[in-house]
Length: 479
Image 1 (tube, rainbow, N blue to C red):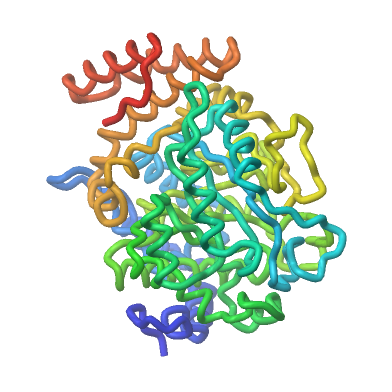
Image 2: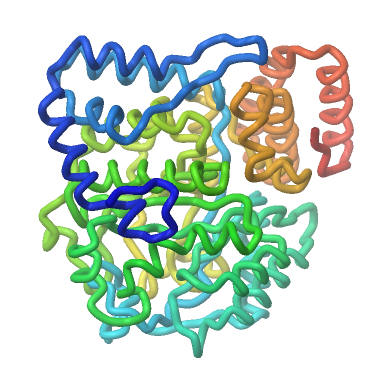
């Protein structure tokens, strides 16, 4: 039985409810009157507190995704752009993954780290190697990392992850500093989530891979990850352990995308209903080629147009949630979806263990092929040329604006009073310390144009003062 507030995976991600949702969406996919009503329900509305959005239920959102009327699809895209602009503006947050270890005891059939893969050399970073990786990432200009590691209680125990986090935060190289470390590791216990919280992590990220229980168990034939309920209920344990910000995601291509889409939104609804705050981020990775993995073996791949529509429908449904797209996707694809809802992208990424310290990109321990292989500087320049503001901001996390406190501000549009100037301040730091001359010139012009848009006069004057101090060598100002 479907129960959004249940703590049992098969009740809050209920198979029969998803099937009923997909049937409802198929029946109504050409019902223009209903689709117009759904779009109107989701449209941003001015209130006494600012601009607010109601979002959509998984059923209403599934109707939009199923709709195949071209003119209505354009309306969906237009609304997604409007919502993105209202709550995230032109800011795009930058981050990079940091792979600590590819030791893994699971047998996930879509991941090259699976225990039976003999092609891939196994590697685990020492703390000295972690330091080298972090310095390399700081020298690129990164301030925000996503820690990645396989599941292996012997090689990658929680103590190892905690030690790595401590090392990451301790390294100050030149003007570099990692100010936020998000963590993407296997489902664990409430006690271990408390330890991660105490270590000062940002977001805890865990991809569901697929919400279809039968497919999930087939795709994870052995290892602790085989347990569907334990994996699916991990976010509840993380929040019980005090982690405010959690990040959801499915691996599109493993199962039917409409099923995954409904399950993903049901998970978001569940977190909101039980904990009072939905996911901080949603990621949308697609299955890619890697060592020992051929994505053509899976028959649920989606084309770029379908991918774009999924992103637009997620943005409409969960308007305040950050959306992440990685270097799995090409430059062309990323350009297309930025305006539809994406608010965070990786740059200069390497998906191999120890990949940053070497000048030449290693491929032998990559988790997946990187489609967008441009440097961080090239991506920063590209974003600015496209009218976006690359942001290295971590202020909300460091000021305690997380979980329901972040969402409370975001839901009335007030977070932009902090985010816009913070984005410009961190961009100025990047330009001063890491940018190429051409990128710096474009960035300085962008900051001059954008700083005058800060509406509060006192805040604008303070931001201008901070910018001048950054240009003279001071660092780490924030609102």
